Length: 283
Image (cartoon, rainbow, N blue to C red):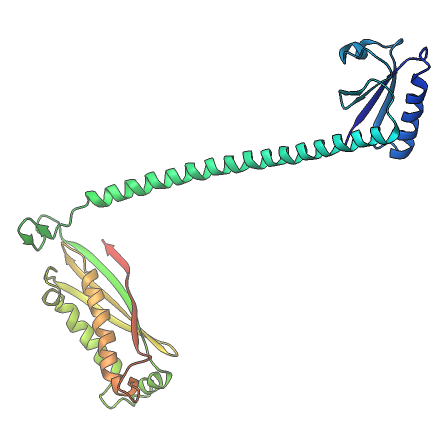
């Protein structure tokens, strides 16, 4: 919206009377929405000189000379509306420019962040690339030499789960499985597998196992197996713990497969999953 209209007039010039009346009508119509000033150039010609006004009456709208004669009311309103629309458009452009600046700033910030992440990932990848697969040699594979390491107490715990039908879980709890005690059998199988891990996984070292615990958590339709393995030696026992969990779960499956199978001999519900190492210590 137009903010200010200045009428440059002179009390000595009779042609200015119509312009003064026009400003009065305009002020009554707009009800102080626009600041209207009437300036007598005889008393104050500084602004008239500043605007380079050479004829009066003259009308200046928001600092721009628009008329140097008295327009009719409709001409003046048309000019005011045109100026107001231009100001509104420029305001939107300013907002757009502000938004663009903000977006550009955000984009720069994001680009900086992405560049930082890329550098971080690149550094991580470089570190990964620099890591050697010690099991590999020019001639194939090897069991890694650990003889120079000192003996330390080492502990690893792994966990995994087997999903079963609810009726199967109930039968396990009630010792109704004809093959025998499911969980005790699974415990024994897990212990044996831990002791024989180096025979199952080719490049694992044969370790002096000092302790093995095999526990189970029974849920509504799932059994979790938790195996902890301890040793005093020169390499870790996480593979032994993972092997123990895997064999415990496989043994449970084998013990209950007659119940888990559907009419077509398939296992639509049975599933082993989430086998992982949850703790590894070196003391």
